[in-house]
Length: 312
Image (cartoon, rainbow, N blue to C red; front, top):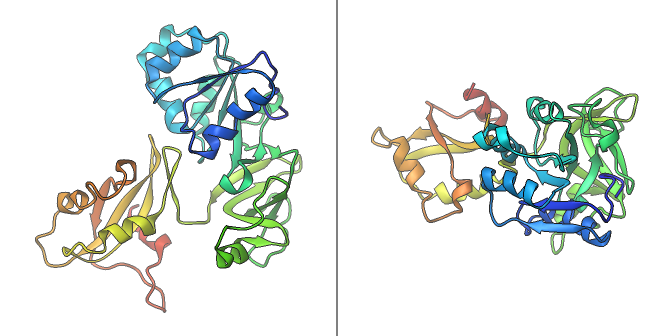
C-alpha cells in the first residue's frame, strides 16, 4: 500500500510468473488484501498486454526491463489507450533510464523496486510521488526494512560511497532451510547480505551500482553460471571454460561461454547444441568466445571479472 498508494479501486495486471516471488508478492497479493482486482495474463505478448490494459482499465502493472522495452518497441503502442494506467513497478535488474523516461513522457509513473526472494520481496522502493524527480534511483528503504551500505570490512560506508546492500526487518529471511553454511555466510545479526552494490545519498535515496555475485540476470530471471558449467562439464571439445554475463540491450545480460578449445575442431554451434534438452531454454548461453587461455589467480581459480573483461 505504501509503495504503490494502492486502493480497492486499483486493477493490477500480472504478467510475471506466479512461481516467482516478484510475480506473486509485488502487486497481486497487496491488491487482493486491499480488495482490489487482479487480472492474470497467461504469457507475454506485447500487443495482447497493451490491449488488456485498455480492456480491463488496468491501473498498475509490474514488469522487468525486457518486458517494458518490448512494449515500448511494439507498433501497437502508437494507438494503445493507456489512459487508465497510472503506475508501472519495475525491477529485477539495472533499469535503463531511457525506458523510464519514455513512460514518464506519457505521464505514467515508473517506480523502481529492489529486493530478492530473501526479502519477500521488496526492501527498497520508489513511490509514485517521487518517481518523476528521482529517475535512476531505486528509492528509499521500505517501511518494514532497515538498510545499510557496508564495506568489505563490515563497517557502514559514508554517504555517497558504494558498498554492499545489507537489509534487516520482519520480512527478511531468518536462515536458509537446511543450509547452515549459506545462512552463516549471508546473515550477520539479522542483517542479510544481498550481494548487490549501491550508494545512498543525503536524502536517503539508494542508487544501484552493480551486482557483487556472479549471478546473471537475463530478462528478469536468475541464471547461475555454475549450473551451466555443470552441463558443459562433460563436453569433450573444450580444454577449459567459464560462463559469465555480458551486457545486452534487450535482456540486460546474457550468458556467454568463454573457452579454450581442446584441439581445433570444436565450433561455436557444437558448444551451444550441447545445452539442448538439458536445461531450460532461457538459460542457454547465447554466444561462445574462444581464447588462448583463461585468467587464473594464484590458487589456480578462474577469475570471473577478468574473464568478463575479455568480452570487451
